[in-house]
Length: 443
Image (cartoon, rainbow, N blue to C red; front, side, top):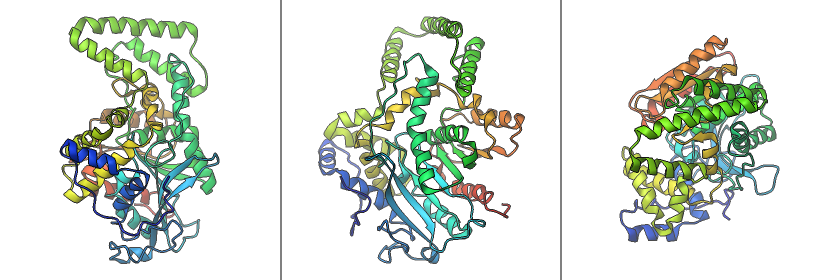
């Protein structure tokens, strides 16, 4: 398998996004592990401070993007950070000052964490700004691929808890990612970190902060997943049962037999009511979809199972999602997305354990965030499919619990991928929030 330590001399422009089956077959045939690394490095080489060598202390002078003095202040390099267990590693892109700042004057390291099935390359429009912030404030920025996603190690993902044991299922799924992040922090010797998490990365950032409250300086949650409760669970008793489940999970207790039975009965009655209102065909499709979800199927399995036609499926997503990007950027992103999609299934299988069908958390964050004591900013796009009301309710609950340094921000002209849709506004917000972590500085 190709590794990030290999220096790639020349990278050609990304291929055109396939538009027919012949192009799709050709795309599939040329894919491989080395091409996966190339697809990531192609996105990063546009940065003036990027170096292809993981051991570099200076940016690569041959990098065509090196056009300003930013390269004299920070260096960016990608590597595969080995964890304690063999074959377990996290893919990372590190932006660090060339001249280190004394620890007393430097802000905590900032860690950027992507969403479900994505990778650090999704933030390619934000790294320049984060590099400028690092150069100005003497901070370090690390973008990580979650274990089992992106270009990190694709180790087996397993949850041993029974399906009806929601609390344990969620905990085991969260452990897969959080244990690796904590191991990475310890091995790096970081006392605290700022966490910037998008979507599932935002959800897991909150879960990490709840587990390790003294290790997080600030949370910036960009369109976080799993915040609100399921709006279809209108029965007040069901909502109360869900809240009780969360309280039991957070306290380490398990639900009583009578409580579990009552909750099961309430949900059963709710489902029967739903069946009366849904047309038969839709009911069958919904049941099939729910069955696949609960069985642990991943949307990325579909792309992989299509083999030579997989690139065509990814292309349909790219043509829809990346249409606002310049052609070269769209082609580069499509190539990157396809290569991380074709990789062996691993962390992606967490989704059915953390989220219920309909993409609402089994243990919603809104019922957990009142225990957070760290400064937190929720960020949503004005066209976001994630419900910003969940963030607003979370802010109210956190303030009521005594955490006053929290707020909810809406970015205009942006959807779920806020940082891609409106990078300028997102970058300004990130710099402003990160400045609050610089000792002696008030933004």
